[in-house]
Image (cartoon, rainbow, N blue to C red):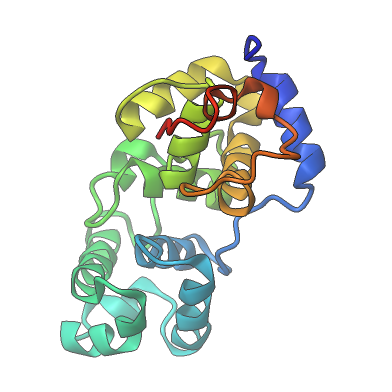
Length: 214
């Protein structure tokens, strides 16, 4: 394995995945907030199916803030963990109305006050809805960045800090999408497709003969 050059790695991934972008469907910061809450332990494809119907009728904080939780649970049931997600969406909607004049906040510390919002969700919103430099660390970003030596932390927060140090700020948001695409399409948790991988020379998993580096 050779020394990691983050910019070179990202350039190679960008050539491999020129279509890398957020795959959740949304039109407003609030719709992205709802979609990102729903996406926990659920595929973007499934979330987009749910929100495709949901957002036709309900797409503003006012639409959810006073909705009965049981009703929202039924609307989002197919995404899994729907009870907790419904509670979070309703709670976040209420706080947005009461504390932020009906607008999704655009600062990390304010986003983290919303029910159901952790650093990953906040970074997704900052990056995609507000075009702020941010690296959201989901399971794919966590796995891939550790395998290829961009990070070594044992928690998403640690990995986020390491990636922010290793990657130029101008590439943070793109890096998030590229690492996700690579994790979904090639560098999967089980049986990754190492042969033919454009960045295998940097990868601990590959150079150690497939020994798992999660």
